[in-house]
Length: 211
Image (cartoon, rainbow, N blue to C red):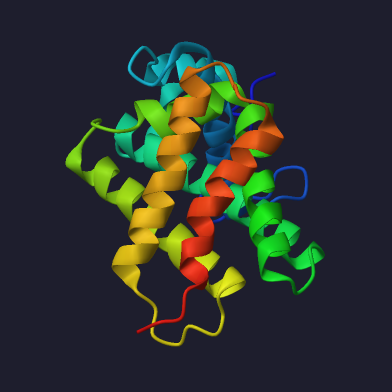
């Protein structure tokens, strides 16, 4: 039975289904589409994927797609934000577990980042490499995510810099991302530990005192 095989009717045209209110069911369907899209994009690439294919993978009819998303691009951006939120959480948890040493925290963050890319190579390829150039809106979302990542990294490994250099943060984050892209293209070589140490050399630039 597909997830859309439900009856939701009450005095306002909807009633709970299996204990879930209509809004909860809609949220559930939206989450199912995001999960299915991440898997589908990973298998086929975004440009070779279709709304119909994503809906089939989610067990939903296309009318439920347009309940949550106005276009396939909107779904792509939702997937991107979802993947980034999970990644940021993993990075933050790794930094917290590493303790107070700056270098150890930076190494832990980068290890979490590169490990996540290696553990899920197909989504990594889509949301790090293929996403560029889809549209100006998607490029803007990508750039904003990089800015947020740079600010978060600086806050964790260089909390004493009260006047952050946002251009430097952007440059460092972009550099780390390009290292990741090259690493993916080269078949995840050199080994993880080596690429982490290489990226750490760049990341520690953020520990320089603000001028």
